[in-house]
Length: 339
Image: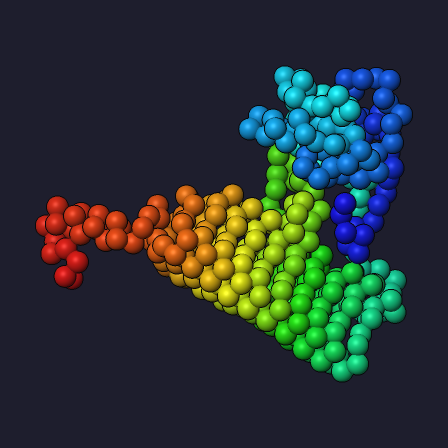
């Protein structure tokens, strides 16, 4: 269920309405009046939720889903359990995106309210600079300092003794204590998700949050996207440099270090104590083991085991990369690693 601090419910809506919105056909017309209240992924959807199934690799998840209804291609409809009504379409994700628009809407700043919304709650000792905007339902902890031009979205929770830099934008996020966010950073914007539809690519709804734990530092102009379904999380005492991008659903552990220009793609899981050199890049849905190191400008396309150091393009273990580099240098007439 999307966090009601950040998303307002527009539902319920009937399956017939959702089918029309997604240009889908109900496999069981007798279920047209079934009421759906929300949207969720296969794994967490309940009987009042609609979901989608588009990847044949997730047949087990589809078979176990408890969703009331599911957008699905005709050839995959048999994978759904008996209690889940199939909505048949060639574009399940795009159809689901259209249906979500009938069920949920992200909360935005009240345009008729003052910059400091009267429903915001500020503990004693919060320091606000000029031109700060704080939305309805936001809560700011004691001793936190918010710099000029910062925008704190509706429902955002910021803990105690935090420092929010100039022109920072925070939405759909929960921050712990002693968090420092430098100038121009953006937390909680929609992650990059798109799918083909009947008329071309469509944006997929991002209905998760960002969770920043205690003592995290995030550098200037860095971006942390909110989750598509689950949360994007950054663990305690992790330090992020300037111009870093953390994509949706990424989970970063405690005491990690990410140097400038690092990019972590969606749904990657990073263990505790991991170090990323500048301009390191990590593909999506990978696991970077605890204590691992990723060298500067490395491009990671495979899981990195605990404690290992990887570098290069594509990234591989450091000793292997050194051997290969030395061999290539010798073949090219160079002097190997003695240079």
